[in-house]
Image (cartoon, rainbow, N blue to C red):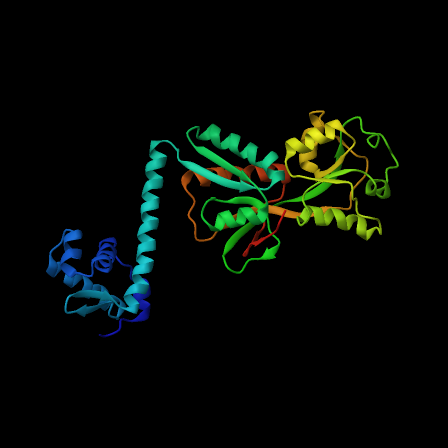
Length: 328
């Protein structure tokens, strides 16, 4: 078979009808059945296949005594043809959805900080624009969320990245940095102190995230760097209902993102301790799979997340090619 000029092949595109024939041939292994599935005669299907093979300059199917079997070239091409047809179908469904009034479902993942601030505001805006859109939010650690994203259970994440993840190509957009602060009940003895020091915090009772999390590690390193003992009077939990209840009932302290703390302070539930903690987390941002096309509903929510983030945090997000995971 004479090979076509490579430049010509690059400029030439398969027609959709030709793509359907290739898929039918791969599914049935029979020219007559593939022709019938595409509502065409056997001679017409045979000629179309010949035209496609001449276009690419390779044999796409082996002619067997009983039927046909795709060659390595054919299998490679058909794999991409199926992907192209799937994308086309998704595009048609997306248009139909938009014409009918945006509905559907979007399910995203978020770490704690944006789940209490950024994400709810974006959801309110998305629902105002599309009341029929069902939105699910999973709040967890970044590594757990990335695992769910890889498995296709989440559309995108507002989470944190730390270690390089070579097994799965992800896209990351930086949104904001996260600083930590110490909080207590409004009447706690430390709240009114103007000379509060790190050594005093080292001997206090704390409510902390479990050992092994990034926040716990950063918290403990804050004392180690100051050559102080790490607090050992600790309750471990990430459940905010438990944290708030414990803080109200005793003299425990808690470390949390400053952005989250402001909401509780404004509500009169908690008070900030008058000390700046030398404890800072890595930035968080948007994480998406490169090979995943978002549904119209997920795309709408993503647009509002970006919009709210730009208003809250100022500078536009920065992109980085690879995503990594943490255990926050």
